[in-house]
Length: 254
Length: 164
Image 1 (cartoon, rainbow over the protein chains, first blue to last red):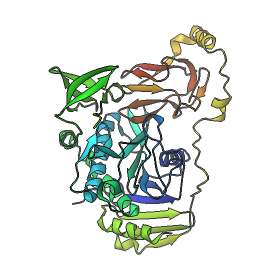
Image 2 (image 1 turned 120 degrees about the vertical axis):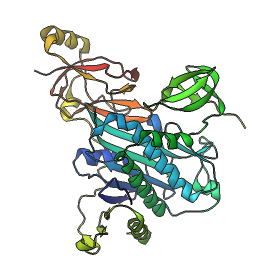
Image 3 (image 1 turned 30 degrees about the vertical axis):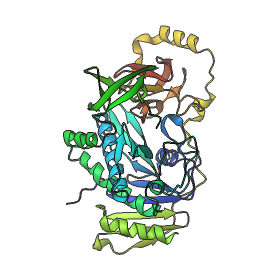
Image 4 (image 1 turned 45 degrees about the horizontal axis):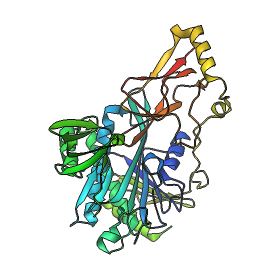
Protein backbone atom coordinates (compact mmCIF):
# COMPACT_ATOMS: atom_id res chain seq x y z
CA UNK A 1 0.00 0.00 0.00
CA UNK A 2 1.35 3.36 -0.99
CA UNK A 3 0.76 6.25 1.32
CA UNK A 4 0.41 9.67 -0.19
CA UNK A 5 0.40 13.00 1.62
CA UNK A 6 -0.89 15.03 -1.33
CA UNK A 7 -3.93 14.33 -3.47
CA UNK A 8 -2.47 16.18 -6.41
CA UNK A 9 0.98 17.47 -7.26
CA UNK A 10 1.60 20.24 -9.75
CA UNK A 11 5.09 21.17 -10.92
CA UNK A 12 5.62 24.79 -11.93
CA UNK A 13 8.82 25.29 -13.88
CA UNK A 14 10.68 28.58 -14.00
CA UNK A 15 13.87 29.20 -15.93
CA UNK A 16 15.00 31.37 -13.08
CA UNK A 17 13.60 33.04 -9.99
CA UNK A 18 14.91 35.03 -7.04
CA UNK A 19 14.23 32.21 -4.63
CA UNK A 20 11.75 29.36 -4.93
CA UNK A 21 10.71 29.82 -1.30
CA UNK A 22 10.01 33.54 -1.80
CA UNK A 23 7.96 32.77 -4.91
CA UNK A 24 6.04 30.03 -3.09
CA UNK A 25 5.39 32.44 -0.24
CA UNK A 26 4.14 35.12 -2.62
CA UNK A 27 1.82 32.72 -4.45
CA UNK A 28 0.41 31.56 -1.10
CA UNK A 29 -0.22 35.14 0.00
CA UNK A 30 -1.93 35.90 -3.30
CA UNK A 31 -4.03 32.79 -2.89
CA UNK A 32 -2.67 31.40 -6.16
CA UNK A 33 -1.05 28.29 -4.72
CA UNK A 34 -2.56 24.92 -3.90
CA UNK A 35 -1.54 22.16 -1.55
CA UNK A 36 0.96 20.00 -3.43
CA UNK A 37 2.29 22.70 -5.74
CA UNK A 38 5.99 22.48 -6.44
CA UNK A 39 8.04 25.43 -7.64
CA UNK A 40 10.94 24.15 -9.73
CA UNK A 41 13.71 26.30 -11.12
CA UNK A 42 17.03 25.88 -12.85
CA UNK A 43 18.58 28.94 -11.32
CA UNK A 44 18.04 31.08 -8.26
CA UNK A 45 19.34 34.62 -8.34
CA UNK A 46 18.85 35.14 -4.60
CA UNK A 47 18.63 31.62 -3.25
CA UNK A 48 18.22 31.63 0.49
CA UNK A 49 20.30 29.52 2.80
CA UNK A 50 20.26 29.40 6.52
CA UNK A 51 20.26 32.68 8.46
CA UNK A 52 19.97 34.77 5.32
CA UNK A 53 23.15 33.38 3.75
CA UNK A 54 23.05 32.67 0.04
CA UNK A 55 22.58 29.24 -1.44
CA UNK A 56 25.17 28.85 -4.17
CA UNK A 57 23.67 27.65 -7.44
CA UNK A 58 24.88 27.50 -11.01
CA UNK A 59 22.36 27.40 -13.83
CA UNK A 60 21.06 23.89 -14.62
CA UNK A 61 23.34 22.21 -12.12
CA UNK A 62 21.17 21.89 -9.05
CA UNK A 63 17.83 20.57 -7.95
CA UNK A 64 16.05 23.65 -6.60
CA UNK A 65 12.48 23.21 -5.45
CA UNK A 66 9.92 24.50 -3.00
CA UNK A 67 7.04 22.28 -2.05
CA UNK A 68 3.89 23.96 -0.77
CA UNK A 69 1.82 22.39 2.00
CA UNK A 70 -1.24 24.60 2.15
CA UNK A 71 -3.85 24.76 4.89
CA UNK A 72 -2.68 21.55 6.46
CA UNK A 73 -3.64 22.97 9.88
CA UNK A 74 -1.75 20.68 12.19
CA UNK A 75 -0.45 21.28 15.69
CA UNK A 76 2.86 23.15 15.88
CA UNK A 77 4.35 20.33 17.92
CA UNK A 78 4.56 18.50 14.55
CA UNK A 79 7.15 20.94 13.22
CA UNK A 80 10.09 18.92 14.54
CA UNK A 81 8.60 15.78 13.04
CA UNK A 82 8.17 17.47 9.68
CA UNK A 83 11.81 18.52 9.77
CA UNK A 84 12.85 14.93 10.45
CA UNK A 85 10.61 13.52 7.69
CA UNK A 86 11.89 16.02 5.13
CA UNK A 87 15.51 15.28 6.12
CA UNK A 88 14.85 11.54 5.75
CA UNK A 89 13.17 11.93 2.36
CA UNK A 90 16.14 13.95 1.17
CA UNK A 91 18.79 11.55 2.45
CA UNK A 92 16.90 8.61 0.90
CA UNK A 93 16.78 10.41 -2.44
CA UNK A 94 20.51 11.07 -2.39
CA UNK A 95 21.21 7.49 -1.34
CA UNK A 96 19.52 6.22 -4.51
CA UNK A 97 22.16 7.94 -6.63
CA UNK A 98 25.18 7.67 -4.33
CA UNK A 99 24.61 4.20 -2.91
CA UNK A 100 28.05 3.44 -1.61
CA UNK A 101 28.77 6.76 0.04
CA UNK A 102 28.54 7.84 3.64
CA UNK A 103 25.34 9.91 3.76
CA UNK A 104 24.42 11.65 6.99
CA UNK A 105 21.95 14.22 8.27
CA UNK A 106 23.80 17.05 9.96
CA UNK A 107 21.49 18.38 12.63
CA UNK A 108 19.09 19.98 12.16
CA UNK A 109 18.70 19.42 8.40
CA UNK A 110 21.73 19.54 6.13
CA UNK A 111 22.76 16.46 4.21
CA UNK A 112 26.43 15.55 4.22
CA UNK A 113 28.13 13.08 1.95
CA UNK A 114 31.59 11.98 3.06
CA UNK A 115 31.80 14.93 5.49
CA UNK A 116 30.84 17.58 2.94
CA UNK A 117 27.54 19.36 2.45
CA UNK A 118 25.57 18.31 -0.64
CA UNK A 119 22.12 19.59 0.19
CA UNK A 120 20.25 22.04 2.36
CA UNK A 121 16.69 22.51 3.51
CA UNK A 122 14.92 25.75 4.30
CA UNK A 123 11.51 25.27 5.87
CA UNK A 124 9.23 28.25 6.38
CA UNK A 125 5.80 28.12 7.94
CA UNK A 126 2.82 30.28 8.88
CA UNK A 127 1.61 29.85 12.41
CA UNK A 128 -1.55 31.16 13.96
CA UNK A 129 -2.13 30.31 17.62
CA UNK A 130 -0.91 26.74 18.02
CA UNK A 131 -1.69 25.75 14.45
CA UNK A 132 0.70 25.27 11.57
CA UNK A 133 -1.27 26.62 8.67
CA UNK A 134 1.02 26.48 5.63
CA UNK A 135 4.51 25.09 5.21
CA UNK A 136 6.99 25.77 2.45
CA UNK A 137 9.71 23.17 2.13
CA UNK A 138 12.64 24.55 0.16
CA UNK A 139 15.39 22.16 -0.93
CA UNK A 140 18.61 22.67 -2.83
CA UNK A 141 20.76 19.73 -3.96
CA UNK A 142 24.14 20.13 -5.63
CA UNK A 143 24.10 17.78 -8.61
CA UNK A 144 26.34 18.60 -11.56
CA UNK A 145 28.73 21.22 -10.19
CA UNK A 146 32.30 20.23 -11.00
CA UNK A 147 33.81 22.62 -8.52
CA UNK A 148 32.86 25.17 -5.88
CA UNK A 149 34.13 28.63 -5.03
CA UNK A 150 37.03 28.68 -2.58
CA UNK A 151 34.75 30.07 0.08
CA UNK A 152 32.78 26.84 0.02
CA UNK A 153 35.51 24.28 0.72
CA UNK A 154 33.07 21.95 2.46
CA UNK A 155 30.54 21.69 -0.39
CA UNK A 156 30.18 18.73 -2.71
CA UNK A 157 27.90 17.59 -5.53
CA UNK A 158 26.78 14.29 -7.07
CA UNK A 159 29.43 14.97 -9.70
CA UNK A 160 32.34 15.72 -7.38
CA UNK A 161 31.51 12.53 -5.46
CA UNK A 162 30.81 10.10 -8.34
CA UNK A 163 32.37 11.76 -11.39
CA UNK A 164 29.04 11.25 -13.18
CA UNK A 165 26.49 13.75 -14.48
CA UNK A 166 22.83 13.28 -13.56
CA UNK A 167 19.45 14.43 -14.88
CA UNK A 168 18.18 17.04 -12.44
CA UNK A 169 14.57 16.61 -13.67
CA UNK A 170 14.62 12.96 -12.76
CA UNK A 171 16.09 13.63 -9.33
CA UNK A 172 13.43 16.29 -8.77
CA UNK A 173 10.70 13.74 -9.49
CA UNK A 174 12.22 11.15 -7.19
CA UNK A 175 12.65 13.73 -4.44
CA UNK A 176 9.02 14.89 -4.61
CA UNK A 177 7.84 11.28 -4.65
CA UNK A 178 9.90 10.54 -1.53
CA UNK A 179 8.66 13.70 0.21
CA UNK A 180 5.06 12.80 -0.62
CA UNK A 181 5.46 9.30 0.82
CA UNK A 182 7.51 10.33 3.83
CA UNK A 183 5.18 13.19 4.82
CA UNK A 184 2.27 10.72 4.73
CA UNK A 185 3.73 9.35 7.96
CA UNK A 186 2.20 12.38 9.68
CA UNK A 187 -1.13 10.62 9.26
CA UNK A 188 0.12 7.41 10.87
CA UNK A 189 2.17 9.23 13.41
CA UNK A 190 4.84 7.18 15.15
CA UNK A 191 7.30 9.64 16.66
CA UNK A 192 9.63 7.04 18.15
CA UNK A 193 10.06 5.29 14.80
CA UNK A 194 10.66 8.56 12.95
CA UNK A 195 13.03 9.81 15.62
CA UNK A 196 15.07 6.62 15.72
CA UNK A 197 15.33 6.57 11.93
CA UNK A 198 16.48 10.19 11.94
CA UNK A 199 18.96 9.61 14.76
CA UNK A 200 20.41 6.54 13.03
CA UNK A 201 21.56 8.88 10.25
CA UNK A 202 22.68 11.74 12.46
CA UNK A 203 26.09 13.12 11.56
CA UNK A 204 28.61 12.69 14.38
CA UNK A 205 26.31 10.61 16.60
CA UNK A 206 28.17 8.63 19.27
CA UNK A 207 31.49 10.08 18.10
CA UNK A 208 33.59 12.26 20.33
CA UNK A 209 33.90 15.69 18.66
CA UNK A 210 35.05 19.20 19.43
CA UNK A 211 32.30 21.80 19.71
CA UNK A 212 32.10 25.52 20.33
CA UNK A 213 29.30 27.07 22.34
CA UNK A 214 29.25 30.62 23.67
CA UNK A 215 32.87 31.04 22.66
CA UNK A 216 34.01 28.02 24.63
CA UNK A 217 35.52 24.96 23.04
CA UNK A 218 34.77 21.56 24.53
CA UNK A 219 34.62 17.89 23.74
CA UNK A 220 31.27 16.15 23.53
CA UNK A 221 29.32 13.33 21.97
CA UNK A 222 26.00 13.76 20.17
CA UNK A 223 23.45 11.34 21.61
CA UNK A 224 20.35 12.38 19.68
CA UNK A 225 17.59 14.96 19.74
CA UNK A 226 14.78 15.64 22.18
CA UNK A 227 11.10 16.13 21.37
CA UNK A 228 11.64 19.84 20.70
CA UNK A 229 14.23 18.93 18.09
CA UNK A 230 17.09 20.27 20.23
CA UNK A 231 20.45 18.52 20.13
CA UNK A 232 21.45 16.32 23.06
CA UNK A 233 25.20 16.28 23.63
CA UNK A 234 26.99 14.33 26.34
CA UNK A 235 29.58 16.67 27.89
CA UNK A 236 31.60 15.40 30.89
CA UNK A 237 28.92 12.79 31.58
CA UNK A 238 26.15 15.40 31.60
CA UNK A 239 23.52 15.41 28.87
CA UNK A 240 23.31 19.01 27.68
CA UNK A 241 20.66 20.47 25.38
CA UNK A 242 21.49 22.94 22.59
CA UNK A 243 19.58 25.09 20.12
CA UNK A 244 21.06 25.35 16.66
CA UNK A 245 22.55 28.81 17.15
CA UNK A 246 24.21 27.79 20.40
CA UNK A 247 26.55 25.10 19.17
CA UNK A 248 28.96 24.51 16.30
CA UNK A 249 31.17 21.68 15.24
CA UNK A 250 34.87 22.46 15.19
CA UNK A 251 36.34 21.34 11.92
CA UNK A 252 39.57 19.44 11.95
CA UNK A 253 42.01 21.06 9.54
CA UNK A 254 42.86 17.92 7.58
CA UNK B 1 8.72 22.49 -22.85
CA UNK B 2 11.66 20.24 -22.30
CA UNK B 3 10.99 16.62 -23.32
CA UNK B 4 13.09 15.54 -20.36
CA UNK B 5 10.67 17.25 -18.02
CA UNK B 6 7.77 15.33 -19.56
CA UNK B 7 9.68 12.06 -19.36
CA UNK B 8 10.49 12.75 -15.73
CA UNK B 9 6.82 13.47 -15.11
CA UNK B 10 5.66 10.23 -16.69
CA UNK B 11 8.24 8.32 -14.70
CA UNK B 12 7.10 10.17 -11.62
CA UNK B 13 3.42 9.34 -11.93
CA UNK B 14 4.20 5.72 -12.71
CA UNK B 15 5.87 5.28 -9.34
CA UNK B 16 4.29 7.99 -7.18
CA UNK B 17 1.41 7.46 -4.81
CA UNK B 18 -0.60 10.39 -6.15
CA UNK B 19 -3.34 10.05 -8.75
CA UNK B 20 -2.86 13.35 -10.50
CA UNK B 21 0.24 15.24 -11.53
CA UNK B 22 0.52 18.45 -13.55
CA UNK B 23 3.31 20.54 -14.93
CA UNK B 24 2.93 24.16 -15.86
CA UNK B 25 5.00 26.65 -17.77
CA UNK B 26 4.17 30.06 -19.12
CA UNK B 27 2.77 28.69 -22.35
CA UNK B 28 1.75 25.20 -21.48
CA UNK B 29 0.03 22.95 -18.99
CA UNK B 30 0.04 19.16 -18.94
CA UNK B 31 -1.94 17.09 -16.48
CA UNK B 32 -1.61 13.34 -16.13
CA UNK B 33 -4.19 11.40 -14.15
CA UNK B 34 -3.83 7.81 -13.11
CA UNK B 35 -7.51 7.23 -12.56
CA UNK B 36 -8.86 5.76 -15.83
CA UNK B 37 -12.32 7.28 -15.30
CA UNK B 38 -10.99 10.77 -15.68
CA UNK B 39 -9.30 9.86 -18.92
CA UNK B 40 -6.04 10.67 -20.58
CA UNK B 41 -3.56 13.42 -20.21
CA UNK B 42 -5.25 16.75 -20.76
CA UNK B 43 -3.81 19.88 -22.24
CA UNK B 44 -5.05 23.16 -20.85
CA UNK B 45 -4.56 26.82 -21.37
CA UNK B 46 -1.92 28.30 -19.11
CA UNK B 47 -3.30 29.83 -16.00
CA UNK B 48 -1.38 32.18 -13.84
CA UNK B 49 2.34 31.77 -14.20
CA UNK B 50 4.12 35.09 -14.44
CA UNK B 51 7.82 34.90 -13.81
CA UNK B 52 7.88 38.66 -13.35
CA UNK B 53 6.23 38.58 -9.94
CA UNK B 54 9.00 37.35 -7.80
CA UNK B 55 9.36 40.13 -5.26
CA UNK B 56 7.51 39.10 -2.14
CA UNK B 57 5.32 41.85 -0.80
CA UNK B 58 4.99 41.22 2.87
CA UNK B 59 4.03 44.71 4.03
CA UNK B 60 0.76 46.43 3.47
CA UNK B 61 0.98 50.06 2.42
CA UNK B 62 -0.46 51.07 5.78
CA UNK B 63 2.39 49.39 7.58
CA UNK B 64 5.02 50.97 5.40
CA UNK B 65 3.56 54.43 5.82
CA UNK B 66 3.48 54.05 9.56
CA UNK B 67 5.87 56.69 10.87
CA UNK B 68 8.67 55.21 12.94
CA UNK B 69 8.36 58.30 15.17
CA UNK B 70 8.24 58.51 18.95
CA UNK B 71 7.88 54.84 19.76
CA UNK B 72 8.40 54.83 23.51
CA UNK B 73 6.05 57.79 24.05
CA UNK B 74 3.27 56.24 22.04
CA UNK B 75 3.66 53.01 23.95
CA UNK B 76 3.49 54.71 27.35
CA UNK B 77 0.49 56.75 26.40
CA UNK B 78 -1.38 53.77 25.04
CA UNK B 79 -0.66 51.79 28.15
CA UNK B 80 -2.11 54.51 30.38
CA UNK B 81 -5.27 54.69 28.36
CA UNK B 82 -6.26 51.07 28.08
CA UNK B 83 -3.88 48.75 29.84
CA UNK B 84 -6.68 46.60 31.21
CA UNK B 85 -7.96 45.77 27.72
CA UNK B 86 -4.63 44.90 26.17
CA UNK B 87 -4.04 41.46 24.69
CA UNK B 88 -0.75 39.70 24.24
CA UNK B 89 0.64 37.82 21.29
CA UNK B 90 2.77 35.06 22.75
CA UNK B 91 5.54 32.95 21.31
CA UNK B 92 4.24 29.50 20.36
CA UNK B 93 7.73 27.98 20.67
CA UNK B 94 11.29 28.28 21.87
CA UNK B 95 13.35 30.12 19.27
CA UNK B 96 14.79 33.38 18.05
CA UNK B 97 12.53 36.40 17.52
CA UNK B 98 12.83 38.42 14.29
CA UNK B 99 10.82 41.52 13.49
CA UNK B 100 11.42 41.36 9.72
CA UNK B 101 11.80 38.65 7.08
CA UNK B 102 15.46 39.53 6.52
CA UNK B 103 17.90 42.11 7.91
CA UNK B 104 17.43 44.47 4.93
CA UNK B 105 13.62 44.44 5.14
CA UNK B 106 11.48 46.73 7.31
CA UNK B 107 9.76 45.24 10.37
CA UNK B 108 6.42 43.49 9.80
CA UNK B 109 4.85 45.78 12.41
CA UNK B 110 5.78 48.79 14.52
CA UNK B 111 4.22 50.43 17.54
CA UNK B 112 1.02 52.01 16.25
CA UNK B 113 0.55 49.57 13.36
CA UNK B 114 -3.04 48.51 12.84
CA UNK B 115 -3.19 44.76 12.32
CA UNK B 116 -5.87 42.34 11.26
CA UNK B 117 -6.26 38.72 12.28
CA UNK B 118 -3.98 36.74 10.00
CA UNK B 119 -1.37 39.47 9.54
CA UNK B 120 2.21 38.39 10.10
CA UNK B 121 3.75 40.15 13.09
CA UNK B 122 7.15 38.44 13.41
CA UNK B 123 9.24 35.39 12.65
CA UNK B 124 10.33 32.86 15.25
CA UNK B 125 13.22 30.75 14.07
CA UNK B 126 13.67 27.39 15.72
CA UNK B 127 16.09 24.69 14.58
CA UNK B 128 16.58 26.53 11.27
CA UNK B 129 12.84 26.48 10.63
CA UNK B 130 11.50 29.97 9.97
CA UNK B 131 7.98 30.47 11.25
CA UNK B 132 5.88 33.49 10.41
CA UNK B 133 3.66 34.21 13.37
CA UNK B 134 0.24 35.57 12.50
CA UNK B 135 -1.97 37.55 14.83
CA UNK B 136 -5.16 35.89 16.00
CA UNK B 137 -6.77 39.25 16.73
CA UNK B 138 -7.40 42.62 15.13
CA UNK B 139 -6.05 45.69 16.84
CA UNK B 140 -3.23 48.15 17.22
CA UNK B 141 0.33 47.31 18.28
CA UNK B 142 0.94 49.10 21.57
CA UNK B 143 4.28 47.66 22.52
CA UNK B 144 6.96 45.36 21.13
CA UNK B 145 8.16 43.41 24.15
CA UNK B 146 11.21 41.63 22.73
CA UNK B 147 14.31 42.94 20.95
CA UNK B 148 15.01 41.82 17.42
CA UNK B 149 17.17 38.69 17.02
CA UNK B 150 16.96 37.64 20.66
CA UNK B 151 15.94 34.28 22.11
CA UNK B 152 12.36 33.73 23.27
CA UNK B 153 10.77 31.06 25.42
CA UNK B 154 7.54 29.16 24.89
CA UNK B 155 4.56 31.37 25.81
CA UNK B 156 6.70 34.49 26.26
CA UNK B 157 4.68 37.64 25.43
CA UNK B 158 5.97 39.28 22.24
CA UNK B 159 3.54 42.13 21.55
CA UNK B 160 0.87 44.07 23.40
CA UNK B 161 -2.20 44.68 21.28
CA UNK B 162 -5.03 47.12 21.85
CA UNK B 163 -8.01 45.34 20.34
CA UNK B 164 -10.46 48.25 20.72
